Image (cartoon, rainbow, N blue to C red):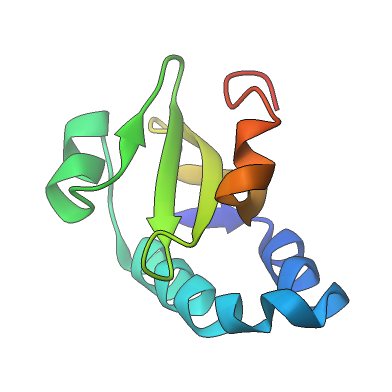
Amino acid sequence: MRIIALSRLKAFWKDNPAYADAEQPGLTWYRHTLKADWASPADVKAEFRNASILRDGRVVFNIAGNKYRVVVWINYTYRVVYVRFIGTHAQYEEIDAQTI
């Protein structure tokens, strides 16, 4: 898979030292996703059982022991993952994962 944008992930843990513990789990998720070849939401669920599949290609991943959430939009046809959001569970509750 191609991932757009690693910079959004890096900014999250580099811009706020309180979230520095998200770096290793975030990079682990990133590396795993780079090697993936997801053609459908079922493929995502097969690799990440705790992923939440939303409508229209949206997926929510729990990382760092469910401390943080990553919301992505996946274009399965072109094998592209667009990172739309990374944040704590509290921050996630303040967004609409379908529209962010």
